[in-house]
Image (cartoon, rainbow, N blue to C red; front, side, top):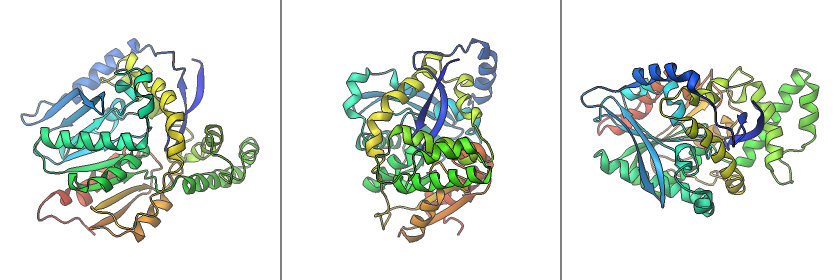
Length: 370
């Protein structure tokens, strides 16, 4: 299949995806999809398994809600991208979390199934960080009301940490706590750290093609504009040396997940590619200005899940920010065998960490481990 190189997460990951006008043939995977659907079917008397559209900010957006017990705390999980929906890969890691939390995800405007709900011309002017933040707040209010919860846990991954952190700053009353995974603090700092890592690894492995390509954009980011083309060259090699998934040069398990997802049709999978192409250029200028370093006080408990080998959104700037910020409670949780894809790479430790450090924050008399 002919492919094009494209950044599909402003986290940022460089991958190979199908041309936007090519939808995959998933008929050969149908039996496997049926098995996965059957395994994931929730039959518990107080459980919930729902997929539905909700009009948010003038756009019909697809929500996915799963949990074994509706009395459990709710996690609102904000996906990366801005057009890399979690829904088609939830089957890979989420089921154990659903025993202890009700998990809510949604395909953001321009992403996945939601992409198919509006013409590009209708939403083009709304592709701004502030709009995504307001969408997240509206969905949090909806979920809180629908499932009779006073507050939710807000969790973001990659691009979703920009949306999630800003939503928590604007509406702390909605949330017990904020959990950042692959947190973005300052994009220019992230770019510099990621680039330096790529050069270091290419030098260590005497990879001359990589060094030549990296030198062609040096100094990076420098004083030049951070274009999509420069980002692709920089992130390509950082991720080749395990900066996206630790110890791996590629992450086929993640990019192939939608083909086996019971939640996604061929048209929905195709929409991931189209949404990525549609949103990327529109949001990139704002993304490159993101800077949470000036935030010296955070209004709710904050927990950061940090991959030791993450050079997609490098963890060290997050650790430094967390050390200096004032918050009701804060915790740095390091994942020694992970890079950027923490829930996929270490799903067991993800669950244990949520139970140890986050769930107690939802209990009136509870306190997490220090």
